[in-house]
Image 1: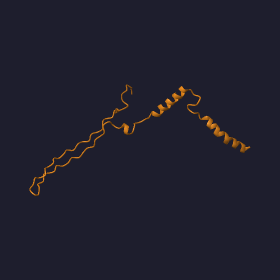
Image 2 (image 1 turned 90 degrees about the vertical axis):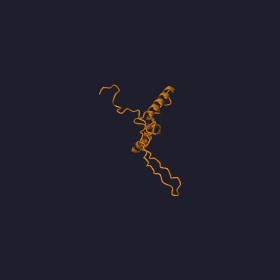
Image 3 (image 1 turned 180 degrees about the vertical axis):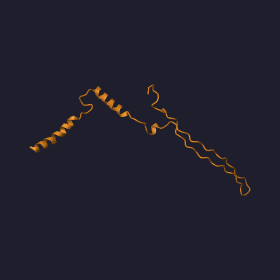
Image 4 (image 1 turned 135 degrees about the vertical axis):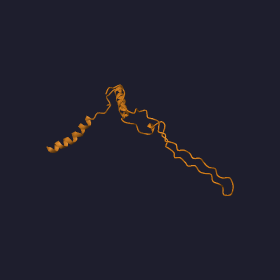
Length: 116
């Protein structure tokens, strides 16, 4: 008797589990219902929390790094009595330029007309 019960449970359990999982949208639903379900699934898939990361979401103006200053080189006389090489002036260092500022507010919790 125990063997029959175990065999029945082994055959009956997968059938019950398969019957409990509905297909969304199922084949009996109307076309309007199927399109509404598909639209809701697409909306759920596009809602993302947090800051977007990737090449498409980088700042408009990239940051430029600072460059070092170069020293001036003095003029050197030619050894055979010809014209001397000219001196080159020093170039000043250029400061780094930050990327374009973000459009996000500095304090996102402030404002919006809400009371604390």
